[in-house]
Image (cartoon, rainbow over all chains, first blue to last red; front, side):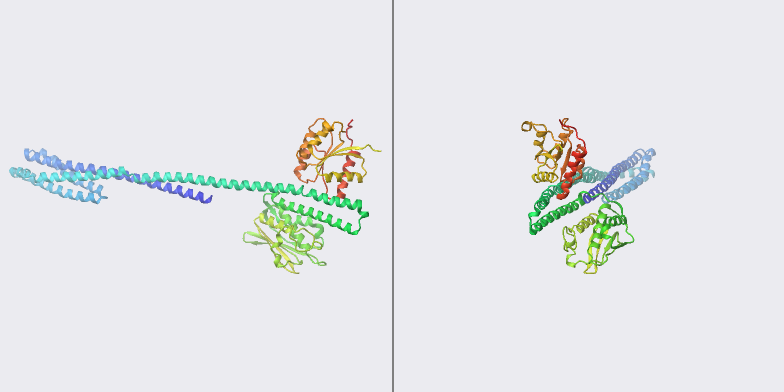
Length: 427
Length: 144
């Protein structure tokens, strides 16, 4: 999910950047286009100025009327300005610049030639001036100027057309947007599949929970009925026919009843264990000290001879009922597995460990052999005989399940005949 | 001598039915116990349908919840919604300890809910207590 979201964000940023660049580029592109049009315009103005100059010169030569010199002088003034503008606008295009430089040179020659003829006329050398005009030199220069101006115009028109043909960035931008849309559709589909698989896992979990609940119902009713039959009829047998049974017969009946009773208590424990999940409450702020005290008070009778100390325990997030159960089971074990004639000494404490709490429950009991340390937490696992240490072996399995539900760990450190310490962590 | 009481036991477990009979015998409770092992037949019995035409309406019904076919809860609901049958006290006698069964039974107007004890002695005590309560302590409407 996270990766999909990140991918989407990256794509979105990509599209935004691309769009920005595309817009920027389009703006530049239009600036360029504007520039190209300006170049064409200026080139045409230049040509017309040259023509004006030539026409003015010819008018003056033919008529001697200095009125004709006005357009000539005017053109002379304008031409350098136009050239500066043209050069300025063409500075990005070296090919164009070289053409402009060529044309400047020719125009200069042309202007000098015109100046020369005008000067001849002014100084009264009319015939020489006319001769110069008809020498055709000026005509070929003018032709050359027209050609180059034409080239410049064509060059620029070509550039403009190429712009029109490939609005590259716009296309890229559109492609990117399309990519984004397609990618999004793909991601959506993927996501959808992902959600579907999550839904199916969820359904699977619900189904398995329902099955567990059904199991609980079966265990609480259907499994107990036959047991009740065995126990009840054995007792009825004993009650009604006890006087004709010998000691063996009575003993056999005792074992049958005991077996059924024990089975009953195992089923009840199994139910308790399965209820850890089905009856689990949401976590809330829980004072472990309160859990500890409740545990002590419910153990009352079995701990009356023990010395149990605890100075302080932290407040955590958890299921109060279940955490009380953990203390109850650990304390009950701590006072139970003590050699006869020894007073049980139990210490409960808490210490901060990184971001979580480590709780310890230490006793002075018989200790646990290293090799059993792992199997200790398995349901119905017992390490000692039932006669001296009664119990079904469910307590630690419940503790483990509860602590793991709280995101913690539970473990044991022990030394034979010295005592055992159970530790668990909780946030 | 006390009048014999009519009990209808609706229970699919023959062992349990027999055990109840034995316990009533142990306590010498004068009774006329009819045992039917499923809900459908029990209802036909109560409606005095065909072969049950001449039966006596029971003074007390002992009803197990875990029945094949029509469940105990359904039987309870049907009886307690029947104008002619709703006054018969029904005692739920079941192995189920489940809270939802208890709540549902009382909601459907069960007169009491008893969990069958595992231990024979306790079972005897319970049966004796039920009999004593319904036949000696409380007054029930007269059937005839």
